[in-house]
Length: 243
Image 1 (cartoon, rainbow, N blue to C red):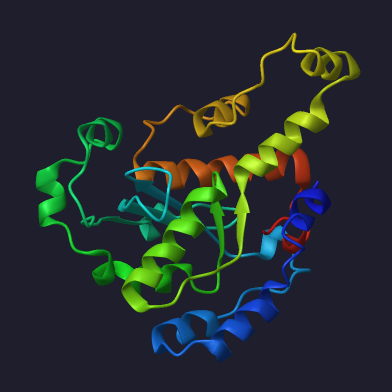
Image 2 (cartoon, helix red, strand yellow; image 1 turned 90 degrees about the vertical axis):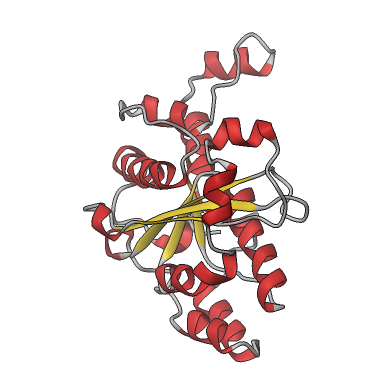
């Protein structure tokens, strides 16, 4: 599996990539972050330090929309120490639309009291440094953090991650028999959902309230542990999965 999805981003050699970024950046804070590096690509998953990451945003376009909350939790395949979890509400550049409040349940009053993103950025970078991020749908976390860092520091942000949505799409393709594949191809079977809650349900994980960054980060960590246990195994090399 890993072969196919990682090749789409030309199998980034993340230790080398981070070393190059550390040498190129002119911002001390980013130099420290990149200087932490990451594990070698041949490190087994069971020995890899992870951090599950989730952002809640005002929309899907990182150039036009804003981050309103960040949740993360460091974890390993063996345990998820929620005592190390971090959660921030951050004040966006513009007021929230009413429909956004309904989704995230973060009120205007909360945002008025919240810090700007620049105030939490040092702690966020410290929490991500040296770890492989695990997200559900990679088109949110890395692009939004890259854009926000460009806005506040003048340089973007890049880091290795594993996408549980990509893993689940692969697992579903791998698990289909020939009859189901044929039915899917001719449109006789509905596509199975890749939403976080639906993916968790397939592993009999409990249902959590969606669209809360802290809860979704923990939910993503649990989902990844289940995916590894069911489909991959702890000995698989992290370089086969990261993007």
